Image 1 (cartoon, rainbow, N blue to C red):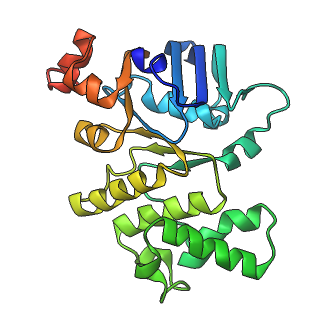
Image 2 (image 1 turned 180 degrees about the horizontal axis):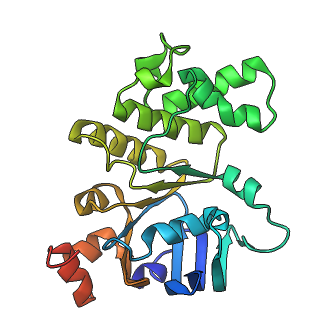
Amino acid sequence: MSANSQSTVPVAIEVKDVDFHYGKSRALKDINLDIHRNEITAFIGPSGCGKSTLLRCFNRMNDLIPDARVVKGEIRIDGVEIHSPEVDGVELRRRIGMVFQKSNPFPRSIFENVAYGLRIQGEKRKAVITEKVEKALRGAALWNEVKDRLHESAFGLSGGQQQRLCIARTMAVEPAIILMDEPCSALDPIATASVEELILDLRSDYTIVIVTHNMQQATRVSDRTAFFYMGEVAEYDFTSKLFSNPSNPKTEQYITGRFG
């Protein structure tokens, strides 16, 4: 996994010797991985190989699943072990944004979708909320499309716009890390291109981890790629290296379409 050792870029997330179980089923096996700050890291691999499981470990969303747990190992974010007693799971999820496979706008106005997280955090100043909503919508490349309809229902937006709205909602609370679980899988090619362009634009301000089944997407947007196979990280390297000259035969078989 040469991408772990060949970089001076600061590490945002450290995964060390992690095993994860759903009940008695071992979903992740001895995962060692460094996610670097202000980079886009892609997780690829066949369905059921552990990509989304590890992604949801980073913000402890798996805590919400009965009998799902990290059995051994450590996950550190900015040097802090996220399972230590002093780390609150709810607070952790506020600092680590999540964008899901299917856009999930709330049944509220466009403005209130973005303002929601700020209000939950206790922000009551109208001017501050207005400023941060506009900043987030601009950051999500959506402002010019919605500025005249902020108080209309978010359900009136197209699929691609709804996904960018969900990204804006995530950005409004100023997380350090954004996790994306197949954010374009339900979108058409034009909407996918706009979301990919946005992801690239966000890299300077955020550390981004994206799970994708679209290998072309991984090559277009990510700096590094981890290939998962049967609950293990079979290979992790700079994206250009992994796709052009993989060191693991399983990686080559997967990216050339021989299984998956």
